[in-house]
Image (cartoon, rainbow, N blue to C red):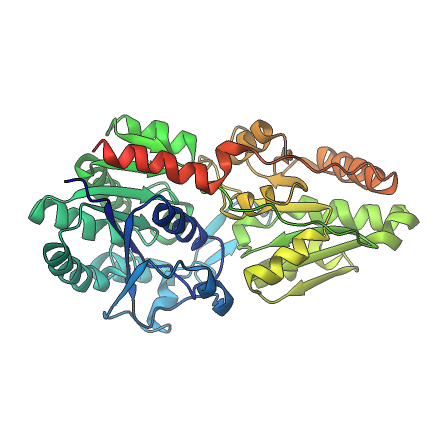
Length: 423
């Protein structure tokens, strides 16, 4: 069968905003350019945290977008999936403990909402895609998660009509920090691990966004491939009157870089020139645990801005000097590279990572020579790096990097094509 056709099942699709939607939007567009028929399967009336109407213009008109009707729990019911209201931060800020109510929530999640709140979309998606595949004689299907319930659709279709199925993990599953925080029952954690293993064993191929996760999954399925999210075009840069430090995206309590806020507060108090020129901006859904923390409150010169469209964010990145990206402050959760890293990488600006030592985020920052990464407890390293970056800014020595071909979405899509046609 020489016809190149592929289906992509994704919960997040325009007008969904944020970095997660960018991955398969870009790959889909480039696969069309490579001569593929691309059929996207997503959902009617999805519950997105961030909506970006402008991003709909980036969808190639040749992509056939199918929206499947299905049931989702109301936002009220989904509050049991929010660890923000179920967990309190330990006094030292390094971990979390659950309230007594979270045990009840865990039981409800295990009984009715496994593996996640979108589990009720599995049946409608399976039935819709099965009929569509048989009628349109498609060749391949990609399921991308989170939500990881999307992979269950691929599993059912693989067993039923023997499709060639690629399971794409934008984030880990059983080792995902949110699962660890939400699920207090050992039985639930084991259930996640079992389901993940079934998915890995049955998929024709596995894609991951982090090398260490890829190494783990490769032990179960040797058709496992590291496929970074990449970026499309280089962002334009403009001079700006301030030394601007920018964070974009959601920031959860477990990502709160308290030492960074302390460093910035100390530099503002101790250096009049730094105080005069620094501008600290956070754009996105920032947890109250962050902006109400003692360390953050010490910073007088900062602003928090609502989530914005990608086009607007591009401009904000273009006038910034240091771009902050945070992994999670949790032991053994090192296999996540936030999608925003690649957005930052496309700017050529300095990237400041906050993550565990040896994490995939730290490693890719080192590999791309795009900046530096520091542990959550590294006060002095952070302070030196920020002040050295400030001096470079004053001296006009800020350098922009050239794009790395391996991380251009167009080239990654060509690699995806080579993988798929061999299945």
